[in-house]
Image 1 (cartoon, helix red, strand yellow):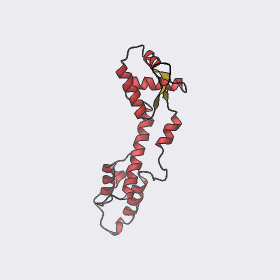
Image 2 (tube, rainbow, N blue to C red):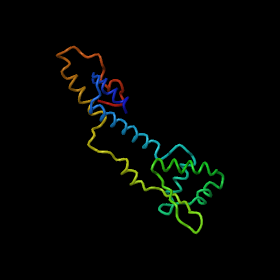
Image 3 (cartoon, helix red, strand yellow):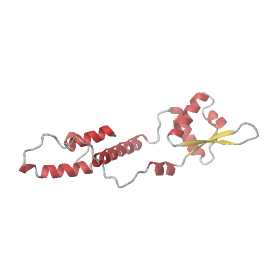
Length: 166
């Protein structure tokens, strides 16, 4: 985000990053993450983790123990691959593994974490403006009174990236 903040400060013609630049960068970052999530959905990019997550969600709220997870793949995955997939899901806040006591060794059961919990965890303060609103407001006012002074050579951000719009 620091690089995005620097870019916003540079577009503003400043050599110091301000709060408005950090907020605009954070807004752009959130917009990009939301776009990627919309396009790619819940795909993690790891075939074992993706399949395990789908099975955990289907079994929700019961969860799957190690034997059930291994059977899910027709016993054609290694313990290392399953452990890596579980770790990946847990790091992303999509699953949780808990130990259930038994007479012998504890039974490890992995549960899918409900989507609502993930959304609540990811929600940030909504008072942040759109990443483009700060820039658009500044450039509109800049170009509005450009007729009274020599035009700045720096193009507005929406001219540099037409996809953004005015």
